[in-house]
Image (cartoon, rainbow, N blue to C red; front, side, top):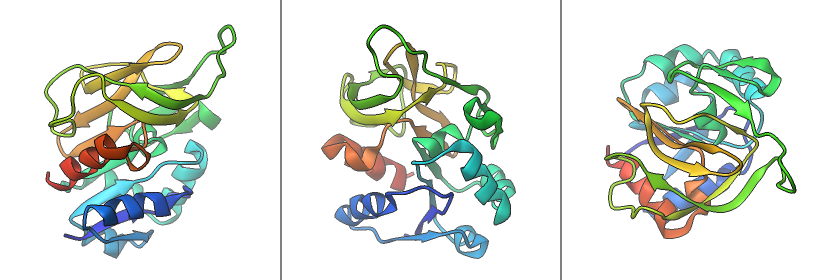
Length: 196
């Protein structure tokens, strides 16, 4: 099994690699299109800004391949966000794999604008990514932008508003949380993805 983690300018890649290693899988962090084409599983990781991530994907001519591949692709946090059409962050046009746009959380009362920490999921429908994950399981989030729940949403969560926490369409999967930082439940998410 060849797993690649796409270089889209994110940080903390080692935590994803360590999480995969604990499951018995090696992975390679790369922007090389040849390496990505030869992979069995593709992960778009997630810390950074939408504008910068899209510039890097464009620089290495990766956007077209990522939207057209039939191989399983998992977007994590920002990686999930750039799979949508547009982000309010830097007014960025994204990959457009999923319909919809990312909005910024509004500052409400004493709630910080950034959603950071553990939060639970509400599973909305049968999901390949959430197989054997109990409803109301907790995962680790850190994000300022969100996408609304729609027909591709497999699970939601709530901060200042309800938002999509897991999305799936065909061979494309996204999770707004960080499975690599979410203990046993997060490891199960990664394992479910690898087994697609």
